[in-house]
Image (cartoon, rainbow, N blue to C red):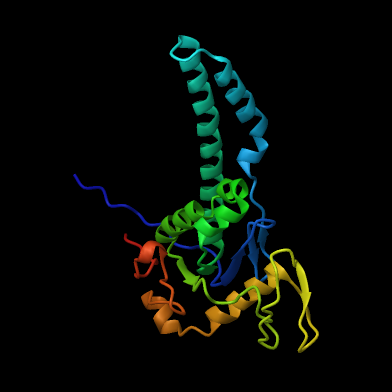
Length: 229
């Protein structure tokens, strides 16, 4: 007997939001909806170091060393489960609240090289995958802005691009219009404007968005799924 799977429809209002990924704030929304990541590895760093020291003191090949390895593996497994649970809770909440979500496409390998453990702890890439899986259940469209779009350096008021901006600049003032920008919020607003300029018909069909696929890992297809009775 085949049991039909009932899809969960988005019960929220017809709304869309653009988010900018960041290390200080995990997701910065153009509408003021900011989300902070719990960073479970940072919270459990003392337990990880304690388990590593205990493992280093054990004699290779002994039963105690095998037990110490299992203890260390258990600590990392608990951290991974905490991170994944938070990712799923956040993804479901976003899909229930918004019909269309726009994100920026990130070069995660480069970010991990520059910032290391913190990038791995928040799990940008895994969250994007989970968000797409949740979007299929709730009928939400998820699209990505091209990673080469200057969302951070571009003034959302006049369009000036600040090429002199560095990673340490959290606030900057546009020399053309004099507007003072908060880095993450300005980037989220630029993503919002870029998404608003995209044709609605192409968005519904899941086509490429400013040169970037509307889904992860190069699979260009719509993420919305029709509900079945």
